[in-house]
Image 1: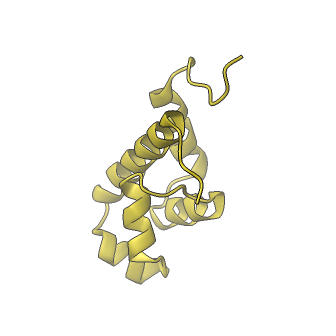
Image 2: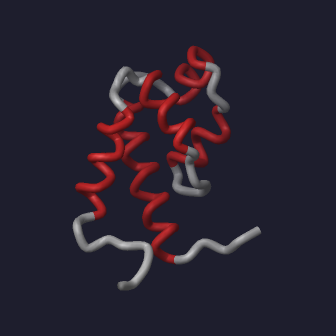
Length: 89
């Protein structure tokens, strides 16, 4: 298993916070998982920044929450800021 660097950990944490904020406005994690056939454990780990979310999973979560995936990504870009880069230039 590959170790995550600080930037990857930060990215996962912020993404998880955003997804959790959207979800909490609509329903519980258990309800989301049951109604939309999502794995509650993986969804929880994503929300807690413990695992990286695949694009397809972000898309499914967004669809379940009745938002566009781009809304999550745009929010992520805003929170990370213009100076966030995975690679030093």
